[in-house]
Each structure stands twice: as C-alpha cells, then as structure tokens.
Length: 278
Image (cartoon, rainbow, N blue to C red; front, side, top):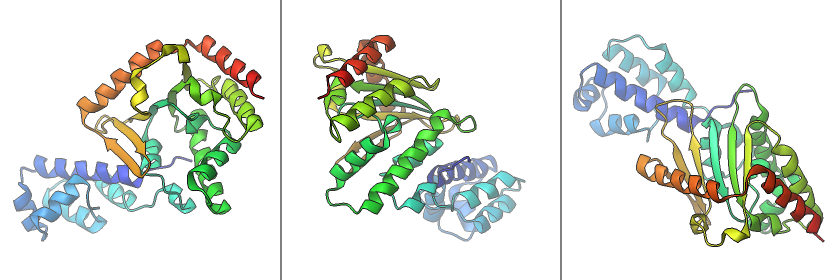
C-alpha cells in the first residue's frame, strides 16, 4: 500500500496555489481581496503554514481561470492524517519526511540505523529512551519502525538507504549480548537487499568529520521537493532545507563514505563483532 504524507502534500499544495496565482498575473493583495481573505492569510496558505480547504481551492480555480483537478485532489489529501498517527507515535517530524523520500543517507554513531534494526533491538532502545514507558507505547513504536522497513523491499514505493555506521555502534551491546548478536547477524542479511548500502567507520579512522553528531539527508522523487537535512536532539529535531547547508552535509557524508571500510571489509568487521560478544 502506498503511504502518503499530509505535511508534504500541504507543501505541494502551497507551491501549486502560489504558481497558479503568479501564472494568472495576480498579486497576493489582489487575489486575497477577490478570495475574501486577508493578504496574510493567503500568504500563510502559499507558504504551507495553513492548509487550503477544498472550497478555497475551487474558488482559486475560478479566480485564476484555470482547470486544475489536481489542485482539488491535493487539497483533499493535505487534510488526511499521517498513517503513523494511528499508532500515537511522536516522530519529531521524521516519519513524515521519510514517507515521501525516495533515498536516505544516514550517519549513525551510537546506534544501528532504525531501518536496519531487529525488533528486540528496537524495544531495548525505546525502553531506554523512555524510562518507565507503557508497554503499549513501545510496541506501537516498534510497529511503526517495522512498517517503515518494508519499503527497502517494496517494489511500489521503494526507498534506498545508504548507511554509515561508526564501529562504536557495533560494540555497544544494546539489549544484551544475545540481542546484539542477533542484530549484527541481521545486518549481514539485510545488506543483501539491492537498495541497502552499509559501510562501517572503523576506530582506526580516529577523529572524523561526523563526530559532531549523527544526521540524515533525505532525497525526494519530485523535482520541486528540496532535499532535507534532519538532525535529532534530546528535546526535538531540526529540519534544514536551505540548499547550501544540505549540500554541506552531503559533502561531509561523501568524505566519511570515502574513509569507511569497503563493503566486504565492513561485513567482516560486523562478523568479528558478533563473534566477540560474550
């Protein structure tokens, strides 16, 4: 089943209504007056801060004198709830981004990336992150993450993952030795997927550019959707869309990728880490 992101649909809707107004040769002030709304209200809709209703979209189609069925479809889709909301998950805005992405580059320093985790490894992380969290909430988080993982092998809505993982993440026995062994063996299996590329940054690398913090760069299939840099922190997250800043993160990732072990050596290091767990 293809899953869609309401926030991304809202942003696409915003870009569309702005494009249609500009194509019609109307200023925001003129269009807002004709649409019986304030200029600031129309501005918020064209920036994606506020959702444009289907009724408002119809009025825009009439005002701009254009037939655009896609606009009405976007207006309807923008009001839908994200699929993950049914699980009560606080995703810090990441699942919304990944749902629409076609490719992910992730630098992970202390954990195995979420898309490559086993369920027991996930549970150990969710429990540790939340302290005395209700078991139901932990299981909902696990469910959402496992649903996300399916896209790595989904022919209809594929997702490509390039992951750089610091060796420290292989040696931290999250969940205990057995859970960690299973997790490392799982890595050896999942890297066989065509859409997964995994490289390990060995300790011998020493100090490297990525030590400032983990991050994810997401790429989207629609040309008008800017790539996004996502950085999580203890009390929230940061989404960066400025092209220059996202490109800086890509350069860091590419340099680290060049420093990482090649695929075969990365797999051998994972095998050795699994064998050494007591």
